[in-house]
Image (cartoon, rainbow, N blue to C red; front, side, top):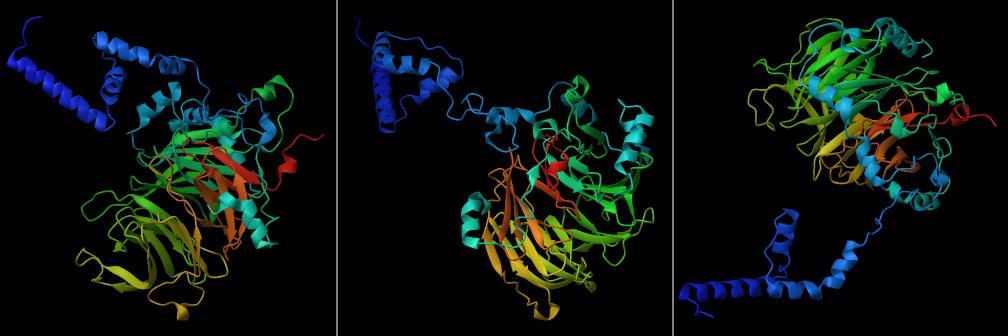
Amino acid sequence: MPELTEFQKKRLENIKRNNDLLKKLHLSGVASQIKHEAGVLEKSRAPAKKKQKTTNTRATKSASPTLPTRRSRRLRGESADDVKGIPNVNDNQLLKMGSPDGQDKNFIDAIKEKPVIGDVKLSDLIKDEDESVLLEKFKRFNNGNFSSGDFFEEIKKRQGDVTGMDEFDLDLYDVFQPNEIKITYERISATYFHPAMEKKLIIAGDTSGTVGFWNVRDEPLADSEEDRMEEPDITRVKLFTKNVGRIDCFPADTSKILLTSYDGSIRSVHLNNLQSEEVLTLKNEYDDSLGISDCQFSYENPNVLFLTTLGGEFTTFDTRVKKSEYNLRRLADKKIGSMAINPMRPYEIATGSLDRTLKIWDTRNLVEKPEWSQYEDYPSHEIVSTYDSRLSVSAVSYSPTDGTLVCNGYDDTIRLFDVKSRDHLSAKLEPKLTIQHNCQTGRWTSILKARFKPNKNVFAIANMKRAIDIYNSEGQQLAHLPTATVPAVISWHPLRNWIAGGNSSGKIFLFTDDSGTIKQEE
């Protein structure tokens, strides 16, 4: 064997030193693992082969097929009925449910960046259905009849008998399974339960700007082949280029639906004639579109809309007037994620913002140069009260009659405030109750928002453990409604005990108190 040169000796010393360092840091297998994952084949020498022999037993074990630690009920040999009303799917299937592929994927890619401008007919946007069929369908829509929950069973024991608990023992809609009810193509960002009393109509918008209309079938499927092949009655239309922010109906005409978007536009949809009109495109003084984050019709004037923006602005305008004038006021220097009007004092609004505050404002009084804002000479409304949160405030909502204000945010809490008397409102709000609740949705799940029922002092919020939790305004938990995935975006029917939650896959979970009417009679 020829004598090694100085360079070769130095090289071997460096290799030995590096290997010793890797062993000390327990990283000896990382390099080979990286090469293996990258598909790089190593040239093995004799010592390497000996090392492989010492790990042969381990390699043999890993080569044998292993069962997943989490398996579907089918693989475990359990019945699909083991969990009431929840479809029998495993986690991998749940992830696949929401991923658009094939025809859906091509459709989304084709229309993603095409804005809808001006007044249009929905039949011009929905190419695969005949106009007369669409018109009949939408006329049916408007038929004129119009985390503490993770431990719910333990909480019930401690709370005892609470009024309203039986009232919200709701059943999951089961004519179709939730994995069959794909109301939008992508992640749901807004839902709305139409106020019709006899007929259920649920509207949802997603992050791509698509709006879906689900005409809910209450009758059970028959045994006929035709019925077994039937799908949920869902119509989708692309109206915006970005997130649908809020959906509502016009108080004076429930056949007209109002929709807002992060692209700055507000549109109406007429259920009677398929017409969609451009109500307003919100812009600043530089003619830049302002994304609309939330809105609500005024209690004092049903034609006036209050709205907030992604940039922290607030304004009101009259929906009866095309190109209506509006004056922007600054309420925050960051995104206002949620806004609510106080039903007891309709001139008073609450906002939750990324600036980590909940604030109550008096819209009657103007402040020309607010001290709190970094924007000079930008008028604002008068601040009545403020609550400073550790992290951003995601949602605010008023109870209809007892003067309770609820908010939740990324600090993993739900907070309840007593605001029924203006005289007792101090500059610094103090919660009457704090409830621990997991609100860490991440980027793939829509932000959780607590919502009061319009006609009762109860509110609902999604649970990251895949459920909808319902509480009264005293913080007592009334229900824990389990689902297969996180029903992040909640919407109440304003009068009935019906509630819907939309997930990241564009699917809807519907709970009602009339399940007896939708089940096959024995």
